[in-house]
Image (cartoon, rainbow, N blue to C red; front, side, top):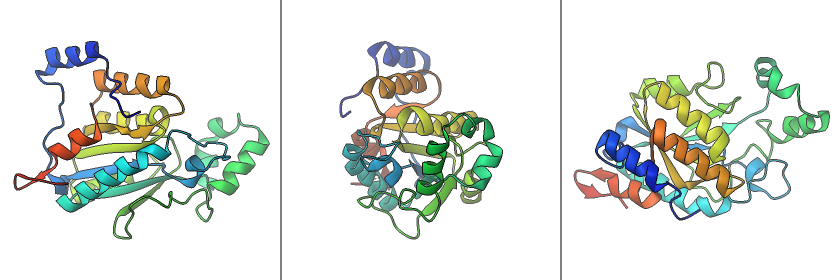
Length: 231
């Protein structure tokens, strides 16, 4: 998924509407957060029920964005999906439709003390980063996480999103972020879905109506501190 999937017709639409192909090209690092969505073993290890086969190639791009924003003084937020008692209680209609054996796997593999819950080992994490657990696809749904509190406490108004999977948790979180008035950007080659078709459809819809979509190199090019390029 290294080549842009944005359709020329959608780029033309944004050019007509906004006068430029991208809306998020300037950053105040202290007010910017990178949300890395669900890059957990549950989605990264082959054989897991939610394994995303396209996730491994995006790890280097995620690390590049992490390093660039961290060097600029921005905020890194690792968002992890968790299945716990609160999830079953508040999202019962979602879980009630699943087979009992699938529920059992999620209970064991997405519990906070499980291997499946842990982030993939090759990610550039630091203890001082921000760590958030969520119980819904979107981290912004009331009761799903403390995301809004963390962002408001730090005065963050701009969000860069990456991770898995593009068309479910990344999309859900990104759409809600935009609707809550955050400047919102998805990095297309730092996201992965189970198919190119799902990945492409989501990014084109988001770009056309909700927020910006850029490639890793574009975002790094825009990340500047005192007019010096962050690399």
